[in-house]
Image (cartoon, rainbow, N blue to C red; front, side, top):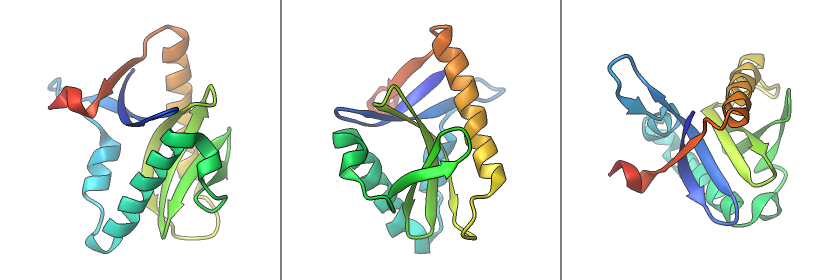
Length: 141
């Protein structure tokens, strides 16, 4: 599993890189964040800031409203305005981001948990088999 390092400090924040049928690599999370609606751009910038703060100092740098359990199998979410970024923590210092969406209700959508849990399962299998590879945004330039 190839992972894109989004932010790094004491901790790392990463997202999965997928390869399409033509062999082209892409990160759906970064594409979604680039394509967020104009009225949500400030919230998206806030999510990026929260990821950077986690990278600097972990959950101690975030309030409970900015980063908290979303439910499911230790799935968490960053929140800014109406944007939610689902993720999980590995070894206390690595956040693996799943996807971003717009909050529509007080309850977490079960589909969001299932999507994040699916990524967590794939990641843990890859990690167990020593099949994880990290790539920085600079590597892609």
